[in-house]
Image (tube, rainbow, N blue to C red; front, side, top):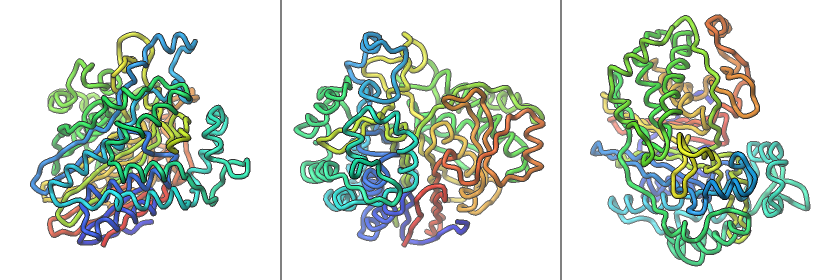
Amino acid sequence: MLHTVRSLRGMVTSPHHLASQAGLDILKEGGTALEATVAMGATLSSVYPHMTGLGGDAFWLISWPDGRSTVIDACGAAALGASRALYHEAGVADIPWRGGLAANSMAGAVSGWEKALSLSASIRLNLPLERLLRDAIHYAECGYVVSDSEASLLHEKQAELSENRSFLDAYSLSGTLVSSGAIRRNPALALTLNQLAHDGLDSFYNGALAQALADDLENAGSPLRQSDFGRHQALLCKPLHTTIKGAVLYNTAPPTQGVASLAILKVFDRIAADQVDGYDHIHGLVEATKRAFIFRNRHVGDPAWMTRSAQDFLDDDAGIAQLAAGIDMRHAMLWDVRSQMGDTTWMGAIDSSGVAVSMIQSLYFEFGSGVFLPQTGLVWQNRGSSFRLEKGGWNGLEPGRKPFHTLNPAMARFDDGRTMVYGTMGGEGQPQTQAALFTRYARYGVPLQQAITAPRWLLGRTWGEESSSLRMEAGFDPTVLDQLQQAGHDIKLVPAFSSIMGHAGALVRHTDDLIEGASDPRSDGVAAGF
């Protein structure tokens, strides 16, 4: 897709077309962008369950028409019973990626929906919760068509997921794992969504539903207990922000990596690069990424445990200038840092009043911990598997501590009055993809959809790889690739529209009420307006 879609009254975008349609219908019925995003997040839980769900976390970045910005931190903390001793007694050196011991942190997504709807109610009377969850309930109960993305990851990760019998049962038809195009139902999830619609979203954390969730988690070997549910709450926070030429940029504060996304763009703002997707553009962003990731890897995590402020780092103009000046535009800085993984869903919505939402919701790895909870139909996240078991230091496991998050929804307010919300899935790739699509659109004037469709790159050493290559999709100018190689970048070509490059999206509202939207052809999504 190369054409940017446009409308005047409202628009949504998400990585699955059914979720986008669910959100658009809410806007058409007079709902706010916040309500539309809840509908999309719930629907994605039913139709894109390998990427997101009620058993995961979420972060919201909201732009209000009066210029205010609000963040909802719907991130769960480590269970009170998730001690280092628990893992040492289990005989593991690191927290496993899958299984009950990986399901060690609370899921905050539903609390984020509740907090968003409380903000929406301050604007106008909310639509009934039954209406917002209607499409999600329908697809869970009556069935949805399994996407290529879900089926391919299911079969690719089968060995890792096979230890959980409930998971295999939930993903099998007549004893065989579901394939692309199959119709899959999740009746237990439909009942859970119906219960939430009837009893309220808080019932996820308090009451019979919370008890059922806790019981299934305990049976799967998770340290989470009902007391962990009752102590959780979503938080309203201030966003991180920084200024570049022509715009103020916003992102979410720690425990997310939002500071890295902003720092990349602030450092790159000081680099001369005239040609979009030319050598200076790509090399400059990659080298800015390395500098931003160094700060992130040393400092970012649960803010209660951080020793340096992310906002202070962004506000230190002299320090940012020094980082930019330290970039050698002819040679690549050596890089051998393991990447942060993660599969996620980003979605955006803008309503007729100008409220704009950038929201990201995730299970961390594809299918999260692989722990399927049979009473409720949820797959639980494994965000807490990123904790380190060494005492002290960065992202060390402590009961009640929030894990480091790759999630980071983005927003920009331009000096000319435009508001942009954008984001992507993809763990380590999130800041890099954000930088690519934002600079293409904002600095070089590339149309929004083309900025997302164009080839992308990904720096980093993922699990199981020996080198920190710069993976680049097919489609870049061969001369530019050769220049990058000569500068010392370890180039690894991947096919066009590769899934490892994430699923991006963006919406822009202009001062004349024109809204532009784009979705990623690498996903199953669509941008839709009216």
